[in-house]
Amino acid sequence: MYLIRDYQETDLSSLELIYHDAVMAQGRQGYSDDQVAVWASFPYLYPDEFKALIRDGYTRIMAFQQIPVAFATLHPDDHLALLYVLAEHTGRGLAGRLCADIEAEAARRGVARLRTDASLLSKPLFEQRGFLLLSRQEVNRGGLVFTRFLMEKPLAPPSA
Figure 1 (cartoon, one colour):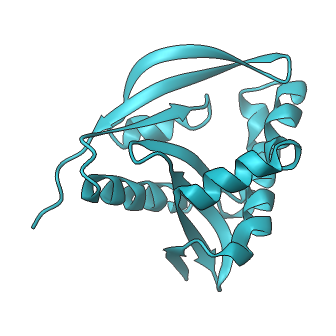
Figure 2 (cartoon, helix red, strand yellow; figure 1 turned 120 degrees about the vertical axis):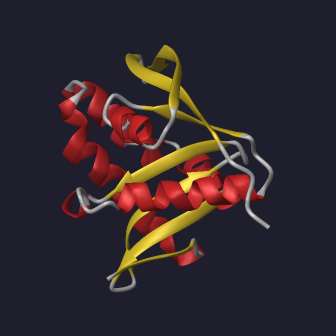
Figure 3 (cartoon, one colour; figure 1 turned 45 degrees about the vertical axis):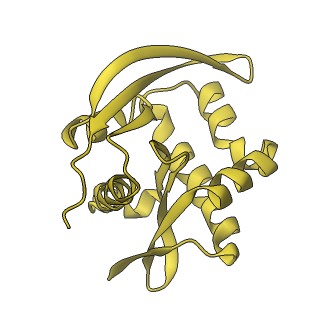
């Protein structure tokens, strides 16, 4: 059974692994080997930035038998910054459940529109969840150009 819970400091190494595994396993569906290698290395090449994003944001964990298998981070309050699922747990609705959790928290915080920077791989998921395309972007990471999509979803205020 999968359960959503709050991030705990002891989860950090698991989140690094989830991030790396998700990119390595799925990244080649839209990106070159070199791009995947650069993308997957973020938690290891920039550990302070990765840790700060996880710790400073609202990070939720999806656990299977109490072991983290997916996570999402809201940071700042109007931006879904991270959403990653271990390859062996994809296709089970975990990303959608984490998105719903993040959307509810953003709405609770008074956010009217939630933004995200979607990859070629995550864009269809966000479209299914009602995110609208604002712009296509080309960003440089590690000397390589990546395509991503700035997307936004209007949020309903939380019910009283």
